[in-house]
Image (tube, rainbow, N blue to C red; front, side, top):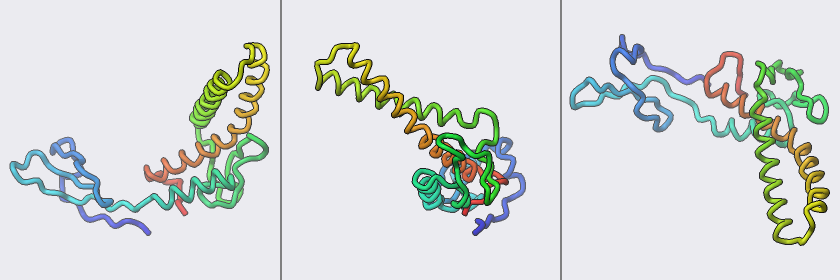
Length: 177
C-alpha cells in the first residue's frame, strides 16, 4: 500500500532557503520545523513512511536460509557454490548492478574469517602446547575451509542488504513484496 502524502505549502520544498531541517522522525512521520519562526515551532507532515521491519526480516530470511531472490523469493541466488547469478530468473532483479557492488561481501567474509582465526589462535594458545609449526599446519587449512564455507553466506547477506538499502531509498526499479 502506497503511503499518502499531504500537500506541502509553497516554498517548503526549498528547505535550504527557508532554513528548514529534519528534526524528528517519530511514529513514521517525517516532521519539518522552521527555525525562523520565533517561539513557535510549526510541524509540517511531509510523508508517512511504512514500517519496513517485517520486510527486513523476510528478505534476510530469504537470502540467508533458502538463498533465493530477495524480491520475489523464488529465483536462485547462486549458479553454483559461490557463483552469483547475474539476475533473478523469475522477476528479473539484477543482483550485481554496478562494478564493485560485492565489495561489502568480501569485507564481511574477511572480518568473519579473521574473527574465527583469532578465536582459533586464542583457544589453541590456551588449551594446547603445540609447537608453532604444528599449529600453523592445523590452523591454516581450518581457516581456509572456514573462509570458503562462509563466502556464499556473506554474498547472500550482502545482496539482501543492498536490496533493503535500495527499498529504503525508494529506488524506482525495486518492487518490495
